[in-house]
Length: 559
Image 1 (cartoon, rainbow, N blue to C red):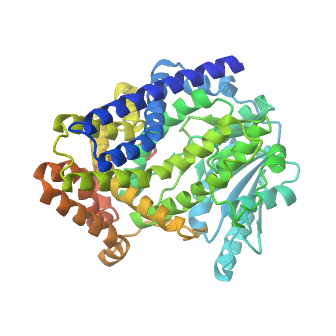
Image 2 (cartoon, rainbow, N blue to C red):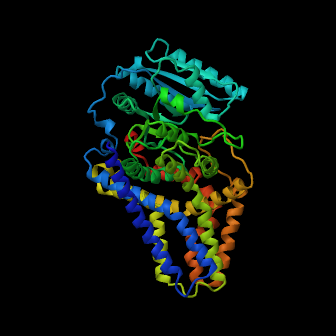
Image 3 (cartoon, rainbow, N blue to C red):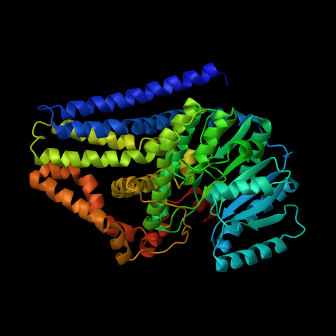
């Protein structure tokens, strides 16, 4: 695409985001300026203003994505021109399928890969792929079980077109990024591309061949990132979470791909990568404080941008899935790990030889988590403003409108995603029809309202601790469905509950109106322990499954 066309898209998108941000800022000013200004009201405005870039981007991506999904004949090809080829020809180049594993249950890892290999061989493309397991397992017992499972898998496929290979590192220097780079330097052989998969990734042969075709069609394309959706989940927490995330990411990724064009994101897996430029530009050094870069994927994408290579996102969800954390404790731990990694980007923003879009990609990743302490600032300042009488002149009607608009902007890509399904009969049919889908959407929005405030509070508390030197590293992930006991939930969330009770009590002591306005936030904190237990409960999970609520199209198709 010509630079002028790309520049025009970005200008139009910036104007849309500016319009959204100025509208919210103007409404906030009118709400807070009634009766004059207090210090607390100024802090509230500061916290809201700090969150406006993320809110506007979220809403803007959702709006643009929805328009493309509704109006374009082939939305994915419209934003990713490499997909204009009607049918994938047989691949010419060799692709290594690289699966990163660490202390995994191989009985869960192997079956999706077996289905992928069977599909590639059935398509007559088996001689163009090789499967590699890249192990970072350090525990001897896990390593022995892993070795036995892989040997049995390889033996079962002996004589088939796609070879199965593996290697285990004796140390895990550089975590996943180091694991991948060591493979590329020493084991990739003649492969032109590698398909990077996580242990819980699942892709179809059709999706993989589509990625290979796009890479072969554009020799300047370094990374093509496939959209990733949640695998059918039996537990309530991931089932509810990924139902909304799927709707949000479809519109978000489509809108973002429209204006980011060749300077798109990389999410670390379910993506195909050209080995030569990635090996040359993707090596990560340590940060100035000596620590390793945790959130490596976007840094690798930014460096490829700067070197003149294309990084594209394919906003097509068919055939690309992943697992999500089975319960709230695992989700919180993953959230904290990502937050720690994204905050490292502050040290990278000043580095030379980055494009403007590359710097924005890193800044956007920071904003994803940095807004949490700003929202906490808004909540605390609003409480202090009420307690000191500063809210007496605040117009209630405008306040409610501001809260509703801020909430709508916060889920700005999710609501357009829900609208797309309800407007497209064929898409809604994949979810069991419009009525059934609407029930799931309503349930998920309730889940989000009960979960997001406590999630934001947890992010804010973690970032404060991080600023005082608390470190986060890469720990093995628990991918198994299990319940959470009341004791475990209380040990994890007692402070969140206490904060909610304190804020609610103080707000209601000042006025019933203030207490009610803060209830959407304080109720989430007060109920977080039973919420944690309920969303991991086998009984609640079974209730959802029996009624097929918040089911994915893949789950319904297999029923």
